[in-house]
Image 1 (cartoon, rainbow, N blue to C red):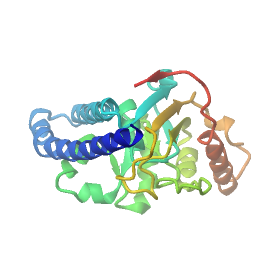
Image 2 (image 1 turned 90 degrees about the vertical axis):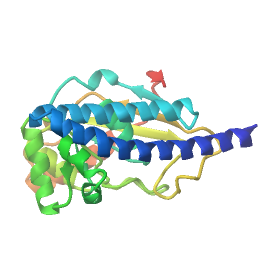
Image 3 (image 1 turned 180 degrees about the vertical axis):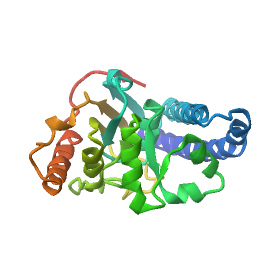
Image 4 (image 1 turned 60 degrees about the vertical axis):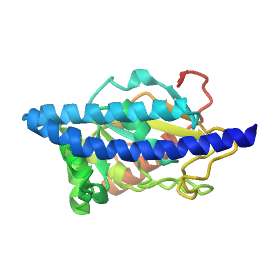
Length: 261
């Protein structure tokens, strides 16, 4: 029975990846060009584009949950829409993390890889949603700070890439630098997956013996001054804040609350 269940989850994973690719292609080629024709105002188009992406990601998560590929519990949903101008930081154990978080935080800014912006099927989507591209690394920090200072919220994975299984969490200093320069409130999110699935070291077709269960814990926002002393110079403040980030997004997820999807 366990082997049959595992085979079904592998089938569901294949279906999930296929649907994700096809839906992305259709949305990029049909819906977003239509949106550019019908919605002339840039701000309205950005809002609509992000709403559509978030809804599509949410539908995708529900689909793979129904297929039995995984289960998901979200905790702390009351913190999702409780303020603007926040730096949302999260650990990054799996390939699905950005899908989960964009489905929850529909209007947040995020950083997109340069390769995505050059993809002819995805470029229109990224342009309409006005996400930040890392195509110009020198300008990336300035762009992130500017978005936060304008009142937008920004989602970052301080690790910069998916975690490496079995190795300590290694945070880059960029997220701390952005938070300090923008003076932004921090909203920590912790993502846990047991057993691990779609990690950096395992290919997508490596399906664990048990169904993966994801827990996403959205914690209360923390003012910047509670995380780092204002008496420190920029270099020491950046490192101190980076250590605080590591503590925040490495918390235990033992609280038994939230709704299973």
